Image 1 (tube, helix red, strand yellow):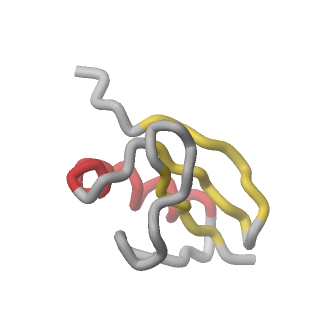
Image 2 (tube, rainbow, N blue to C red):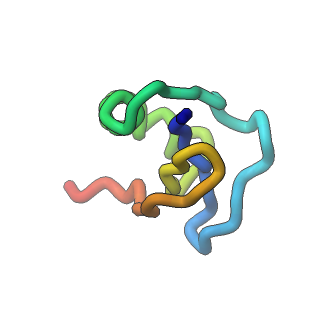
Image 3 (spheres, one colour):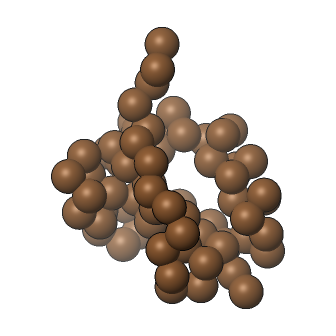
Amino acid sequence: MAWSWRYETEHGRPLEEGALPGELFSSRGDAESWLGENWRELVEGGASRVTLLEDDRPVYSMSLDDPA
């Protein structure tokens, strides 16, 4: 199985394909670690939310708002 992130607007609409990196991960933990290291760059690229996908199945969504 492959894990990936779908990048979305603040209203949950997917951003255009290719607008941000299309990384694939071999584990959920790798995907979540990568997001923790790269979320600011994703926000700068226009993402407001992300959805974690296991293959094509949504697992969960979350906001990329900076809590600080």
